[in-house]
Image (tube, rainbow, N blue to C red; front, top):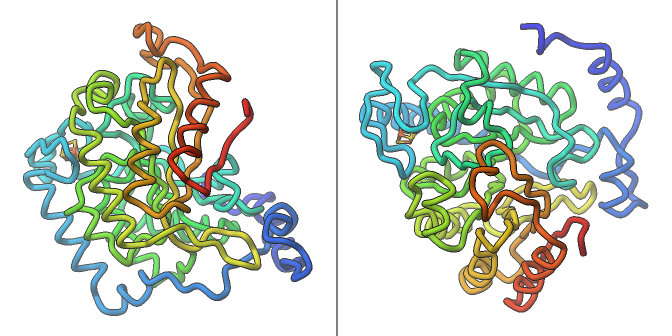
Amino acid sequence: MAIFKLSLFCFLSLVFVKCSSPSANNSPEENLKTNKSMEIKDYTPSYISLHKEGVLKKRGKELWDRMESCDLCPRNCGVNRLEGERGFCKANSDLEVASATPHYGEEPELVGRGGSGTIFFTNCALLCVFCINSEISQGGAGRKYSIEDLADMMIALQKRGCHNINFVTPTHYSPHIVLALDKAVEKGLKVPTVYNTCGWEKPDVLKYLDGIIDIYLTDFKYGCNEKAGKYSIGAYDYVDYAQKAHLEIQRQVGTAKKDQKTGLMQKGLMIRHLVMPNNVACSKEVMEWIAENLPKNTYINIMSQYTPVFKAPNYPDISRRITREEYREAIKSAEEAGLTNIQTQGYR
Ligand code: SF4
């Protein structure tokens, strides 16, 4: 596959990797910017021991079997994906991937210098009318791959110097991911895994990922069900699931923890919240719930880049970008709720 051939860039990257190392004199923030070779040396992901114990294979198979009457996400379609049926997410049991590449636009603690090894899965169950990746999530962009291919993608990204493997919109392919990880460990995978999810997750499905996922990068999109149902078609239970999911995730991985030397994220929960115009995201409710139910130093990235794309121009309340005032209001509500690990972008 052409995209995984060793490019000149990749070759140069590997050469550079051998020539530099994180400086002990630099702060983690400086190391994030100046070193390509940083590795988290003192951290071994627990998926490696779970592979040796046969747990990855077992859990992957159990998740796979759930596709027979699919209930992997809150849509609970009940379709038989193993027979080729497709539910809300439009996925059957064939794995479809849109891209696998180092990504430099994620949070700095995931990107470092080598990038976050991002694997974008085709299809999505949440169906947001403002989705910025709608060609992939709802338009079917991507192509079929085998589970072996998925394992090879992870290894190729690790070889290119990526600091983690970042599964984007993974829920409907969670069986494939766990089975592919099982194979990838045999091939030498050792970097942390990132589950990059919309936050609308079933706790009983997340339990299969306990010890397998190192970092949960979740969107906490809405603090009110009515808006969720309107703008993420029919997801009127978004808040209930997101709250339970975050409690389960916190139980599994705890508060976000960085490697002291490199500044790279090792393990834990990283929450994103996209501020939306006209308070459609109910930001205050999100911040208050996090402050009341998770540690006050929970990592929360309050994002300002909402853009009215895809079907958003058809909905008056979300047909514009946010104002500075709206962004400041969201930050203020996080601060007033007592949250202490707030990341912000521009507009401050
Ligand atoms: S993963 Fe897809 S098929 Fe399964 S319940 Fe969710 S939307 Fe339906």
